[in-house]
Length: 115
Image (cartoon, rainbow, N blue to C red; front, top):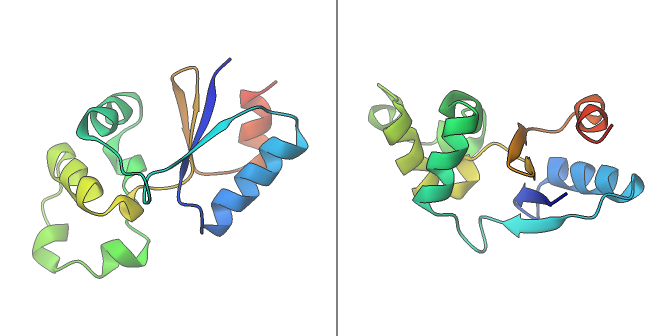
């Protein structure tokens, strides 16, 4: 089983997810998409597995600070462009277990993934 936790190192929710994985003995890799970046191909693949509406973090300050024109008339392609330009707009964490994605962190959901 290949497990990768995608997100931003300085995020509290990321720390909770990493702590949960560590406490449950899950071997995983970490991809900091703010420091290392993320590519269009990955975002397109992710939005094929979970909707862009789930993946785009509209509650974060980065999104809320956008001009209204950038937030209006969102589509998959526009959301991907926003996430490429500002990876902090990707909801986190994104947990990839053998290609199956879980977006966000809830202990009960993680427990079900690794049951």
